[in-house]
Amino acid sequence: MTILITGANGHLGRHVIARLLARGTAPQNLVAGVRDMSKGDDLAAQGLTVIPLDYTRPDTIAAAMEGVDQVLLISSSEVGRRTAQHQSVIDAASAAGVAKFVYTSAPKATTSDLVLAPEHKATEEAIAAAGLPAVILRNNWYTENYAADLARAAETGIIAASAGEGRVASASRADFADAAAVILMGENHIGQVYELGGDVAWTYAELAQAAGEVLGRDVTYHALSPEEHAAALAAAGLDAGTAGFVVALDAGIRAGALGDTDGTLSRLIGRPTTPLVDGLRALL
Image 1 (cartoon, one colour):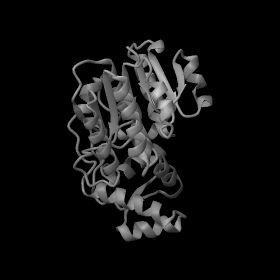
Image 2: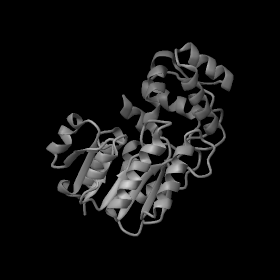
Image 3: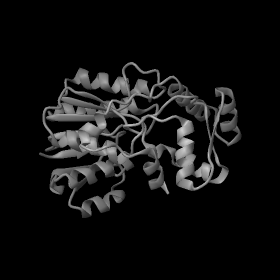
Image 4: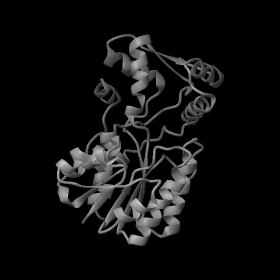
């Protein structure tokens, strides 16, 4: 069984590889697709096959599928370009006749109003249209997403956002990667859509409290209106488009887009998910 991991040298990709190896997958059964081959030397040193795979170059994607049984498509980080990039991977996997296609999507991708959801919805629809034997992993937020907030809190004692009382069921990248490893190594998952999140959904006030515990100082949450948030981001140097995107993300959180948790992730990986405090502490 040969498994191709796209974006293998990224944060999530590296965690997935680590968990596959830890769970007993032989390195020679893993193919690491990387855009920049110079960044895959350490993976090759572990015994993996490292190949060029660029979401914007379909020829590299088709070549990467040769002899592959399973594919993990880690969603592209290029917001606004993902749908076309993912389609190239879907087309190549379909032509290659892979036995299992796993995709890292977003929470409730087909019904959510979250600003990130449409591209994931389109990708899920493309996977279904291609008739691929697929498993969809709808990953909630990574706790690592809050590294910048933690750094600012260390300097200012403030976490500012317009998320209101919305909750986030975050978990560590390692937790989500472990779930991907379980799916890739296991059977009877084809056709499943898994909503994955941390065991505890927290508010931003609780995020501030956890940050204070990690940093050893008082940290408070400043709840901003969307307008105040946009103005603060602009004052910090963000362009209007980026600031609007961040405010829109917080609007989704405020509306509850990331607040659901039913224990599916912890059941898949066979252990509790990483608590918020521990996830933040790891960022230090």
